[in-house]
Length: 345
Image (cartoon, rainbow, N blue to C red):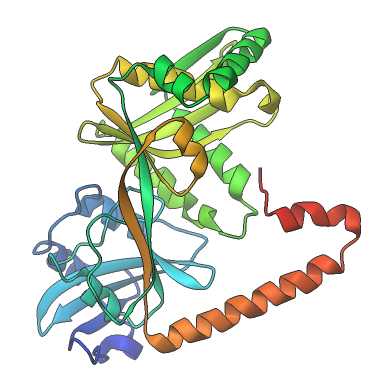
């Protein structure tokens, strides 16, 4: 299988590891996967499938070796000014196939600016690690008294309002794992975030492929709120042992004032309380999650990159912000509010 010769002979100076870039999947990568451990949340089959899925974003795959021995197979997806792991936003906490304890070393060998999210263990010290942040994770047991929990968080009034408003629209029900439900929710999620500067929706084709793959193996559940049999809001979840991990959610905007998202979430948690799953993992990052769960542990996010790329990227970020600021001030006043608020909902 042809390799991209530009990088074939490059070795990372700090580690001596070599990085071999491939323009498509082939036997050399399959052979490497045979000796590398699978991620808990992403099998080698799914990893290979994600690499081969067509995408609006550029993808790259590398074999990192120590001499002739495979250390890691790392697949990346381009987003804005950096690279993401191909599993980012697709499956939870999935690192590339890699020899245990050598992940940072292997990522450093790429010589690129790579963001890593949902790292669940202490981050090893390395001069290639930048912008390290630890964020709290929200989780909730499904064996608690949810009504008492929501009252304690002053959330009961919002739930009651959403319950009453949705009831006035028609017959309300929760649908679970019906054909097409996961794709419907992913479509609504993509519509909501398509124009946001974070550009997370470049992962949408991979998210759809992973949803289909995991659903066929019973490790993915799709929930939709129906009003008179018509879907108005949905949430998709991964199965991780006895935990349901929130994947993505979406809703139609037609009934926003009725609180369909809140009603969906209430019925989802009540379903969980009667299920075999013992807790729900909402992830981190947004304070609204405290209405539904408690802080329970942490995850890290950081970049791995050579210093010169960090400096260059920061310069580009500042330039883009200045350009956006100038552009916003040149707009008519009545069109500026949404731009400055950063609101995409």
